[in-house]
Image 1 (tube, rainbow, N blue to C red):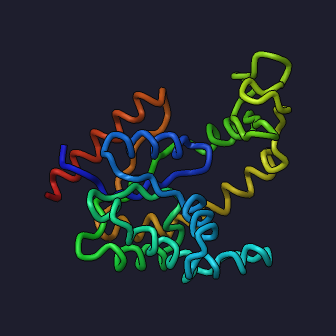
Image 2: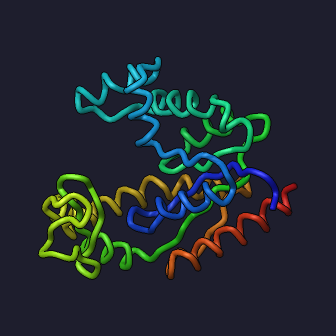
Length: 222
């Protein structure tokens, strides 16, 4: 295995992307950097772009590209990413963000952008079946329920279906994701940076697929 990794992991919500990011982070011993986590951290620490992000978030506005790129740039400037690399989760979402990312990561750039492919129907069914604890956020499903009558095993809170996990709301999110990411996938493909991995199956099996594909592609590049 080539030490470290500089990866972007793409995929529909509900495709198991977060779980696989954590597994890859441990395998390659690199930080898993999710957009949500770094935004919250930047706001909490009061960094330059964290303060800008807070202004938009407090006003209920979408963050413009320059603020999101600035927050990611701040995070990728820390020593842990410079030493071994990173796995980005939730960024980039647009071609403009992808171009900025390649600039930020020069001279080494990216190893790969990996698309974890799970059919839309499977994602829709998975998200519609999801249930969460209203207190601690622990995840369950209609097939993997808590032990006692929709009471959280972790904290005792009520386990509910989120308001945005209705089939209609999920469909809107999936439509938006596909409209946003189609140009992004094409952009990575044009630069020979995109690989697709089947995300259906047991998480251990999917992890093995990801590692095999990533290692093969990185060996060819190096």
